[in-house]
Image (cartoon, rainbow, N blue to C red; front, side):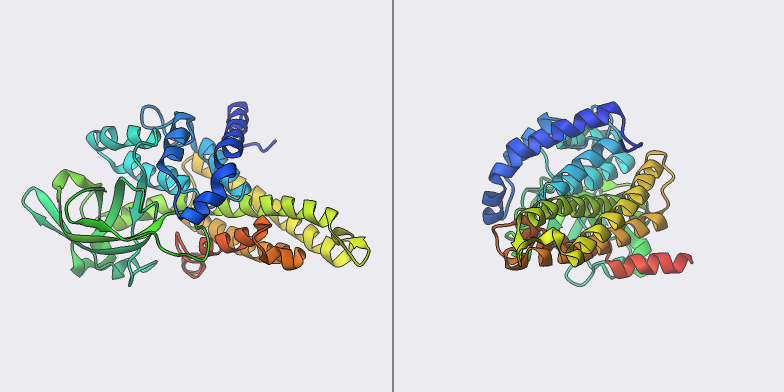
Length: 375
């Protein structure tokens, strides 16, 4: 048993596995075709305590980050990277919990934990991804309101979202140090959403563009301090990057298990695929590398539970996990031969779904830059 998990975590894992088996897997192909996950899944997940699992009651399910890890890992291991629970629970909700006023937390977090309000975070723009100082979305103060103008893109949960945390520049002369965070509710005049974007993978995940046209929000929708958004994001990004790393590792572990089953049953040149030494060595390398990665990630989880996780170490976790995930999934697909590129087996979808993990949350190149600057 992994040392970071207690008995209550293990019982919760059984509960999450049942939920995925009964409520997600029978419908996942349909959601892939539809390009969106139904809101009813969110309320069902909220009723089971799967959302905001790591936040205390009444703002969440009353667990700790290890409960969140269970949800992250089980969805990834089941090859369900298109379910956007982690963005909602492990990114949006912690921003609110750590930065929000009591009124903001009471207003939005209980509804998020219940799945009645779906969260998204809007940082990326058509001309600004990892380079936050290039953000062009503007927010200007007018009396007791802020007025937002601009555009965001690649917004996970964007179509379903009822609450969006928006990064906007309140002082362009300060660059990245002039960014502030705002809570914007869906339906606010001046906010419009584009249709679900067509993507290479993660088709069940609703991703869209957002447009702000003289959108007016009360000044109390400012999250944290004005012009402190970059500082706030720097703190929260360590958790986000560890969550992505955990998704990458568990996803690769799940697909390795599926591939072991396939290679034991498929014969080539009169022998099982796994009985060819080259193939067996590939699988052995994958198992050894993922085991070593798992030990490191568990150490990172323990540090986050103790509030000692260094952002540079979190960058290392994301870089290692997502790069290894991509490498291993490519090899596992190859072991399936032509079937790997068909929709009959999950490895093809897994391969496509995994690709953006090396981009969002900070690309691998940005992770290398963060690590390199610290050397």
